[in-house]
Length: 399
Image 1 (cartoon, helix red, strand yellow):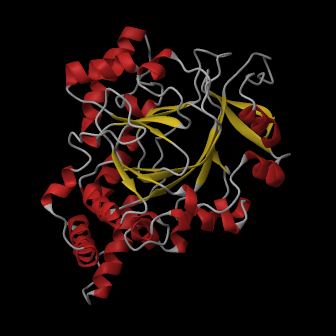
Image 2 (cartoon, helix red, strand yellow; image 1 turned 180 degrees about the vertical axis):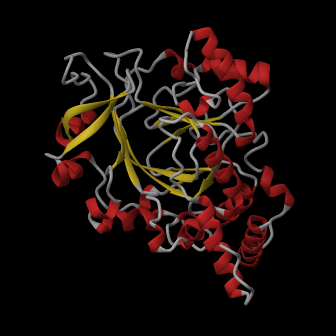
Image 3 (tube, helix red, strand yellow; image 1 turned 90 degrees about the vertical axis):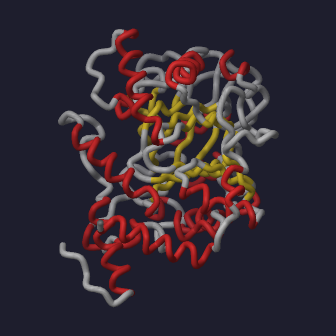
């Protein structure tokens, strides 16, 4: 009841600030648009692609978000004024040691510094040798800086650059101090979770490792998230057959697949079947959370034909921001080397999904990498509701 009251209260404020949309608007991009948005790949549902420079598109975002639909905001490159190139990171952090991920084994790799990683990032003709085996490998940098806030590592101007690039209308929901970001209501003494931003960088497709991709396997985030691509290398000269068939030839950036949150149970059902076919053991009751699967074209066809679901599949390019509702299964594969900045937030529209996922994570076996609840969604709800009631002169909820 408290959650419902909070959502209703904030929705009242949204209606006051955003006004009402015509009923036909919500179908503009998500139900069979005649022209596919740029970057939309074949064999998938059309993604909602909105222009950051269009007030009407940004008004539509509010409506789409209430439908729990993933959205792509384009045209942010002109709003990024700092130097996000590898050269800038080499200048700022070159000698710093980093923990990378070997995309073939999905295991951490020690022995690299940022200078060596970005050298591999810029020269994709030869995959860098693994420091232990000497074999060519495909690497990615994730969740960096690890164990530190973005502003503790980067000059403050980089943080401000990212936040200012977000369209003003969306900042109240996406930014850390936004009124519609429930995380902003946690007091400092509650030790708020680190919701980012974090930097992600991956090397692009390399024919030297034809069966290995810099990718993030299928997973669900416990909160809402946005992801801005701030830099990309050139489009690769060659792609694997699957991405060529989808129409990604000549594109730079990253291929995303996002499924609606309501499709997660059917995907989990399919993954349990697929795990048996592959002989995988130890798959949990929530196989999406194990993050060991990347759904290939064959998998996606089976999901479409046997389960009646399909993903939003598109290429994210430089200056595009992907906004993902909590609970939406998604996966990402890098075509070209690229750098992204991502940040989590908790919107009232999706707080129920956050609570449900936190419950799922607690049910995972002890030692599972997601078994600890780090989001503190119930505490966010309590403090947000307390704040809303205080502005109305009502009695605070019991703790």
